[in-house]
Length: 171
Image (cartoon, rainbow, N blue to C red; front, side, top):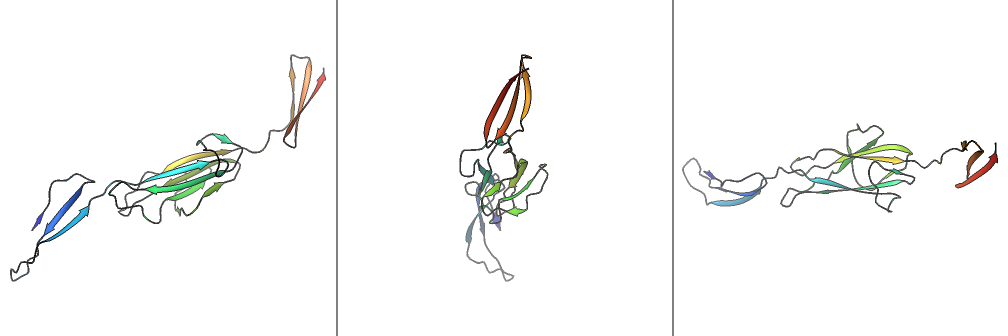
């Protein structure tokens, strides 16, 4: 026979069983404990710019490269994170499917907008929803140009060697 106590998902429950053969010989009662786990793990992303530096906020502009460090954590009493996870992908339009197993830091160095998408799964195939972070790198300085203030002076801006040179000329 099989007997179990009422339980709710994620609770531990005990199954007791007794084996009877075709000649009605009854084996000794055995006891086993099993964990019912339907909670997905969570993936944490530590994102810094420059790599290893200050914390980076998704969606903000930075002039530095960005480093993403991913980690998986399962709920207490859960089955544990699957060894092939987290999985991630990067693209320019936030539509890629995370299939690359994370094994080391992901450095984003491309100027423009890059998305990193990631998720984790536990040993019982409970998967979290794919998460995403928009990374915006702008490290090309603006071009020089001219502008007029008060219709009296023309200012020319020329960016050279990361310095700003302003030349003033009367109109």
